[in-house]
Image (cartoon, rainbow, N blue to C red; front, side, top):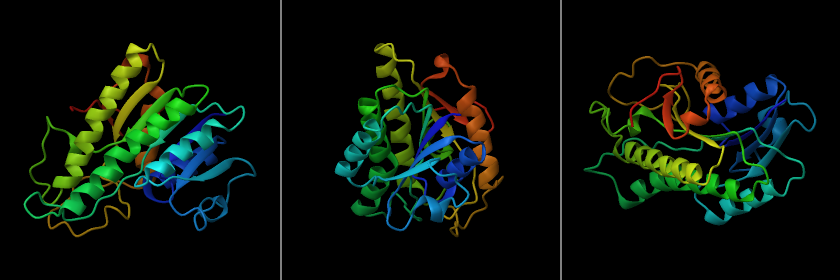
Length: 242
């Protein structure tokens, strides 16, 4: 039995990560923004007693992020195998020529700053480091493979590019400390979730269901070794350019 920690688990990809882990008999620690509404029984009614714990963690609140890391670190005898930082937003459109300061700030805080600080807080507080630390990124954040057809994705793409660069620094810093933690970025595919349910005005090719995406992501996470730290992958197991 493994233990997964999923940050951003109330819906979409994060919710499915938890569902599949529970179905496989693993233990899960999950975070939500609305703990009074989003509980284990409401989100994953088939979970066995004690199999899943839900904590509050808000990517827009630095105090909440710090407190969450301390709470998890205080759990007795908890060894976390895999951490997945899934929290993210997309407010469409967010064109570089049109977006407001608040629009850009919201994407950066939720997609970049929050996940990096959450990972940092967990690494500081966990008594035993995890095997893997995975950030759910996006092909939109690739600088080398820019996607000019993605009209209205400027803030989102910039936030994911910033996330990618930050996690690469995190991987390098841990490597210099001789840490065994494997830091990864994963593009989960063009997944049919509520976040993607917007009228883009252009065709999105190759959309997949969330269960297929998560199965692929889990396979990638569990199949990587220490030499893969600081690398970017697709849900299909192909390395992606930064």
